[in-house]
Length: 198
Length: 259
Image 1 (cartoon, helix red, strand yellow):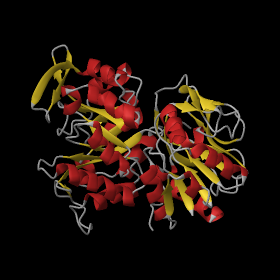
Image 2 (tube, chains in turn orange, green; image 1 turned 45 degrees about the horizontal axis):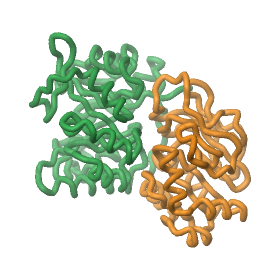
Image 3 (cartoon, one colour; image 1 turned 180 degrees about the vertical axis):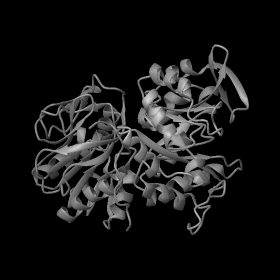
Image 4 (cartoon, each protein chain N blue to C red; image 1 turned 180 degrees about the horizontal axis):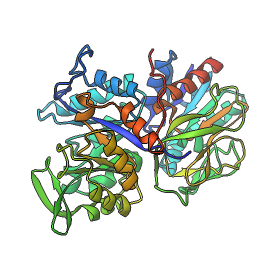
């Protein structure tokens, strides 16, 4: 089972519908016990880091996801779900991340517009078993981003400078953009992930 | 590369059906918003806007149903606008898969609804739609589909809306809307220069050259049009071709999703 962490944030339905479109049934899971039985975990997320972090804690999902990570269960993070991989964010200094990746997410400076809303081109810098395609266009919606030189950055996007667009390592992949809203390119990414972990 | 300028076809929907007829003769059901939306997706639309003008008591249910059906089949971002009054209603639409809601008259009548929606669902989901008409010393906000003047200055209202949490401005010129005389460049430039959030310009597009002018002469981030796409006078692909030829960044076309 691919479990989508259901902590009440906005893009849950879209992520589930996108997996369905590529032939995989993902389940919305809120109970940490059920999460422990997942074959793979998706952390969706959109909006405010502090809100996402608080809701994530309110449902006691942090320990279950951390434990899954330690057991090597594949984890995909989307947008704020990916930002939760880091230790924290400037958007909410008191709200913790999961700490899977060293460093913090910061507000983008010297950018033409905030938020960045729209399609931008991602350059893949390093291979990852769950990434089939190389460079591609994806849909972004965010005001905060990890530094392009941060630990585990494997894809970048140019928006007033290079920003982290994809992070990943063994058993872990995070994307700042929204694959569930990135047309054929995004569906391919989700399909590749689902195939690899199914 | 950098962020692409967005081309946004808009569909007017009433009681779950596309309002006007369409010249896409090969559509199975020309009144089905999902089928028309899929056509735009195939053409390379970067996102879609559904403007609901249903007046009946069933409006709320039909608009949520529409958003859900679109999200079942299309995997590009879309905004739903028209008659949304409060954060609860916005939430129903966003939860089934819409990315943003556009608020217009309700936000003017009670500006606190902007922060209510942004606070619960994030600024990125809260689009402030502004209809503006030219007056002696600038542009005035009008509501109720242009019928009601408000006395508010459009540029100041856009700035206030952003301070209250709007993450994007959908700006329609009542001077150019429906005229096919091109986008209202002075209005668009004034608003897009005054705010930090992205601005979607709407009203007056007659063809690809109007989009080129919009992006060459204003800082707008996106251009919206309804009838020129609806009546197949031009395609999203034609617009993007003209933009690319003018060295304006656009997302290249890709093979459509067919599953």
